[in-house]
Amino acid sequence: MALGAAVPVCVAVAVWVIGRHHTPQYTTGLFGAHGAAAVTLKARLGSALFGLALVQLLLALWMYGRLPGLEAAPRRVRTSHRIVGWVAFLLSVPIAYHCVRTYGVETTTTRVFLHSVAGCALYGAFVAKILVVRSRSLPGWLLPAAGSLLFGVIGLAWYSAALWALNGFAAPGL
Image 1 (cartoon, rainbow, N blue to C red):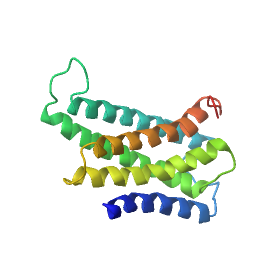
Image 2: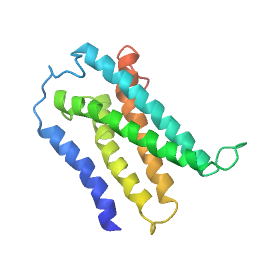
Image 3: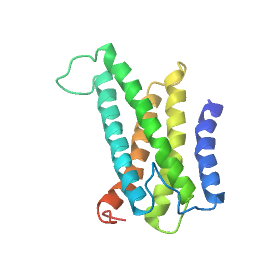
C-alpha cells in the first residue's frame, strides 16, 4: 500500500524537479505554432482536455449508478470511459511537453504557481488512478477519490492557464 502511494507522489515530484531544473526555451513551438499562437493552441487543447475530463466524470457517475433517471450502464460505457481516458492522457502529453520545455516549472505568481503544481500533480494523479483501477485489494472509496483528484487537477490546470489565456489573460480570483 505504501509503495502504491509513493509511486504517484514520485511521478509528480519528478515532473516538478525536471521542470525546476530545466532552462526555459521560450521559442519552443507546438505543432508549428510559436509565441502567442502556441499559447492559444495550448488553451484550446487544454479546453478539449477539460471537456474530455467532464465526459469521464459523467461516464464514471453513470457506471456507478449516480446519475438519476438512467438505468445501469451497459458494458460499452466502461469501454468508452477507458478510451476517453486514454485519449485525454494522450492529449495532455504535448501540452505538458510544451509547458515544461518552454517555461519549466515557475513560481513567479500565484496563477503560475498553481498551474505548475496542477500540471505536475496531474501525472501523479493519473498514475494513482491507474494503480487503483488495477488493484483488487484497495478500499472501494479509493477509486472515486483518485478519479476526483485527477478531475480536480485537470480543472485547476485548465482554470489557471486555458481559461486565463482565452479570457484575455484574466481568470477570476487569480
